[in-house]
Amino acid sequence: MGKFCPKCGSPVGAQVKFCPHCGEPLTKPVQPIPQPTAPHMLQRPVMQHVPENKNKQDKKKYMMIAAAVLVVVLIGAGGYLYGSKSSQSAPVKQADVMKDKPVEETEAQKSQTNDKGTSKTDEVVYKQYVNSRFNYSLDYPDSFVKTQQPANNDGVQLRNPNDYATLDVYGAYRSVSTLDGDYQSVLNRITGKLGYHTKGGNWYVVTWEKQGKLYYTKALYKNGKKAVFTLQFPAELKDEYSPILDHMEPTLKLN
Image 1 (cartoon, helix red, strand yellow):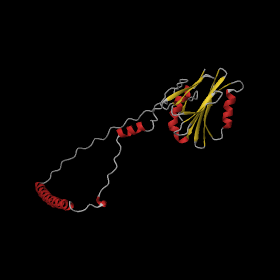
Image 2: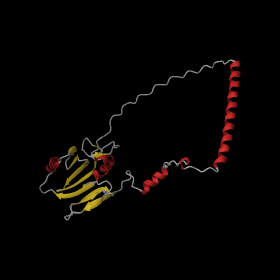
Image 3: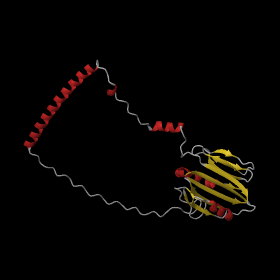
Image 4: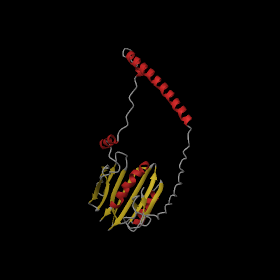
């Protein structure tokens, strides 16, 4: 999940410096960076005098080595020409044929593959769900498709067919229930590992993990009504869904 504001409890992005809901500063004091020490000056090498006789000996030795290398090259070239002529009539064995080494995709080819395949995770497109009965709305990724629409029109159930994540959204009147009572009821029903949970003046947030899945639920109360959404997704996709939750959480509106 993304980090949460220590003052109001709202999820915020990893790079956000101030809470977009209450203005609480989220940055930490910057520690001074130690200045690097000046590198040691390298000593200038001392030129040594080489005797003239030694230079003549070395020059003679190099000329002999060069002559030997030239002889080897000429012998090798003659053998190559002879082998080339003889190979024209000799049959080619399958074992002697080298298979082509696979070529790695270029960056342009990879981008084309991405364009033709699945969409990039950093380019999530959102749709808005609006409920006319309880007058609330919520943004959600367009990869989610509707699976069920309750007959009483209090909300909607959606699912991502790519990773089986689900999203349940509903509204209700507060004729009997209260924020504190609903918040405590959610905590009592959790059988998995309880995660981040908090409440404010007209909202609460509860997260938990169960059987390899992460759950995030938020409820908003206003004008005798409430709107609630619960997003459930595989735990291994936490990093992918964290920015999605950062976008969705503030878009839950209730009039």
